[in-house]
Image 1 (cartoon, rainbow, N blue to C red):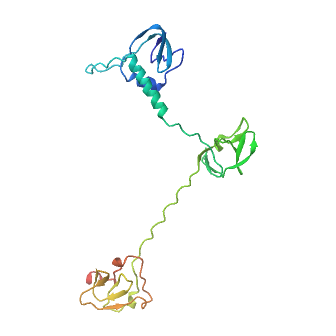
Image 2: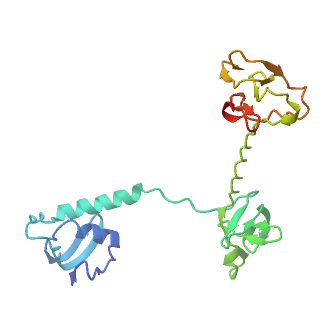
Image 3: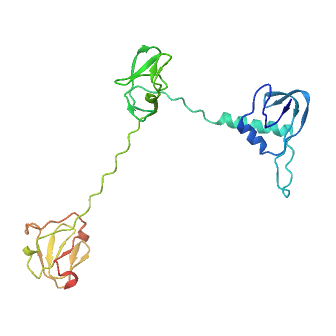
Length: 243
């Protein structure tokens, strides 16, 4: 019997697709002959011939070194070691008190327990019985796959609260005598009507040689707004730019 990657047949089993792919990338096979058992990493193969067909390579590429029996053993050892190091997935199990997502996307729970009922010990009120692995049903044949619990239910995080927009101060300008055409709120909350355009300086609004009148608590229509004090300056309509 001849063993090749194409037929992948031995009296003792098959190589996996990953093993075949890895071996094909390693270069040419050696040709073994004889009527005996050929053992690779503890896996015996009875053969009369073991043939490897060389992977075509460009003419300019140097020929790959021969794949010796020792190298075959090393390759299989590396594969076996990698498979043993891979962490095994934990089997899915439902737990009492938790909620789960079903195969069709619904939320079921909380999980409770019941006395053994044809091999089932978990229950969801209004839904039915569950096996420990999340399978819905009971007995040997009663099943409904759409109700199977497949993952723990995770509530979506609520959207963040929108940040309220800040507002500027406002006033009924008819209640503010001219020429006090500017209103600004200092850092301490005190608010003044000013006859010249001020500028923020330290913790206050100041204007050279300006007259000012305090209005907070005195002008009923004045609303301080929610903006920072540095943004609180407002001007009588039509007086923007010092006109």
